[in-house]
Length: 315
Image 1 (cartoon, rainbow, N blue to C red):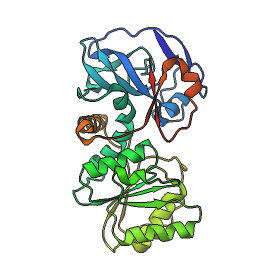
Image 2 (image 1 turned 180 degrees about the vertical axis):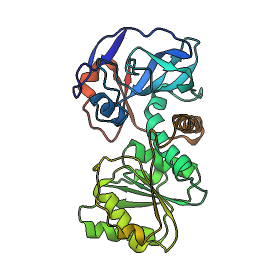
Image 3 (image 1 turned 90 degrees about the vertical axis):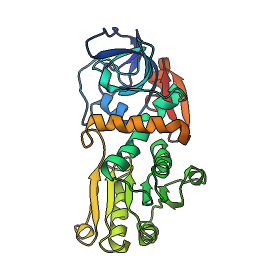
């Protein structure tokens, strides 16, 4: 079969031939329809992600959509190594497959599954969102953040605050009630954050970490109502893997810090989050910009950084 193949860690996959997976008890051979190019897929392929396997060569791609040998349209995740989703065929445990709603396009489903799951799981499994609460999405201009706005509103958030370096008015069309620009001056940024925390924030979904996370927590400690918990969920680290946090920010506030991702939420619950989000997608009309690319172009798009659209590879 044709596939994207990682032959050297840290290098872009090469398009070529790879042995086909064979059927096995409890495992399904999936004819792949679409596989999204995600940050997790790249970091696992490079060996830098905490869930990386590391054995070479292998086909990258931690998820996708396709059709089983029985003809069922499914979303799948975590295929059996070395058969990743960026190939014509892959091998997946049957319990890691979720039926797709008939109204949902396969390419759109592949594009929104992981980014949509990230906020759905964070809100449902970790933060335990209650209807009427206020959610702040830190880093709302990418695919994950834009979906987080929509999903928070769908799940019952009364108010959504969106932050970004280059926020645009279309964030309001997605459901954002307040937009905060992430400016370089930390004092100015802290003042902006203090204003939103004074009005009340129940949950923070953080896709950035780094300086903005530090400033958010300090502003929350200074301005949020005393004794009112703020569930701070760390999801991504696009702006930096480490922060410096004054101890007083925790002693003088009701911040509750937690993470959401692979291992902090058990895989069956992550799959439930994906299932819930995909089932809701047609009626909720979740929107995401996607860019379909032939799998044969994998070497050219592997390093592409496009925050405006989600690259989806099609065999």
